[in-house]
Length: 412
Image (cartoon, rainbow, N blue to C red):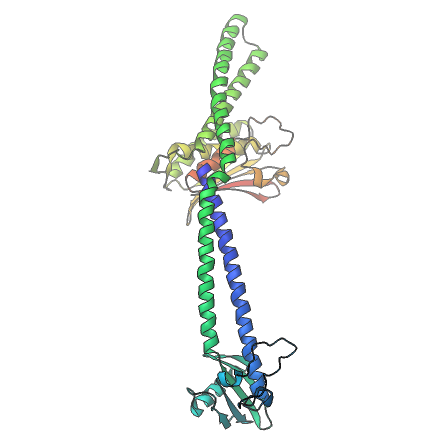
C-alpha cells in the first residue's frame, strides 16, 4: 500500500510538473509568435502605405538620413537598415483579379510569375492577413483594385524555431531534474503515512493475539457455565456477542493482509458463473427466512481468471450486504453477464437510498444507518470487497438505481 501511495505521489507530481512545463512552453511560444506576426504586419503596413515600397519615413529604399520614428514607442526594432534588410514583394491586381503590376526588386528568389501565383492564393484565402509558405502577406485596396504585399519571414521563423528548441530543452531538463528530486524525496514525503500505517498494522496484529485468547476463554467458560446452570438468554447473548467479536477480529486481520504489497493471489481460470450460483445458493435460505425475494439471471458458462477463494468471498460480501440492508419484503436481483468485460450486479430495494453517501460506502467502519442500529454488520465487508477487486485489477462500483434501489457492480 505504501509503495503504491509513493508511486501515485510521484505520478501526480510528474503530471503536475509536465503540465506546468507545457503551459510555460506554450505561453512562451504564443507570445513569440504573436510578436513576430505583429512586427511583420507592421512592415507590411509600411510597404502597403508606400505603394509597394517603404515610404519616405523609412528612406524609401534609399539611404536615409535618420532612423525612422517609432509609433508611440511601441515599435523598437526599426533601424536605418530595415528597408534594406527586409525582403518583400508586391502584386497589384485590377478589379477583375488580373495582375496589373508587380514589384519584386527587393527580393531575389521570387520572379514576377511566382509573385502573381502567391497573390492569387492570398486572394483565394479571403483573409486580409496570413501566411503563405514563409511569407507574411497583407491585402489592401488600391484605386485600380487590390494589392497584396508579402514580407519574407523565413529568417524570423528560423530564429523562432531555434529559440523555442533551446527553450524546450531547457524546460525539459528542469522538469527532469525536478522529477529526479521528487523521486528521491518521495520516500521522505510518505514516511509519516508509512509509519502510521505500520502502527495500524501492528495494532491489528496485537489486537488479534490479545483479543482471541480471552474470547476463546470466554466462550469455553460459557460452555462450562451452560452445562452447570442450563441454557438461558443471558448466556446466549454473551455467546452471540463473543462470536461477533471473533468474526470482527478475523475480518480486520484479513483486511490488513489484503493491504500488504506482498500478498499474492492464486490466479487460475475458474468457472465464475458457477461460483456466483454457489454463493447465491448459500444465501437463498437466509433471504427467504427474512422475507426477501431473491431472483437471479446468471450465465453459468462464464469463466474468468482470478483467485477463486477471494472472489467467492467478494460475492459473499455483496450478497450478505444485500440481505442485511434490503427492505422488509423487498427484492434482491443478481445478474451476471459478459460484454467487453464480465459484469456482476447485485441490486436490492432500500428505502433510505437517498441518505447514503456513495463515495464513503467502501470506507472502513462506515455504516449507512447513522444511528448504527444492529444489522449484524461492522462496516468492514465492503472495504474488504473493494480490496479484493483492486487486487484483481477489477472495478467495484456502488450506484443508486432509482429512489428505492441501490446496486453494486463488479467489472472484471
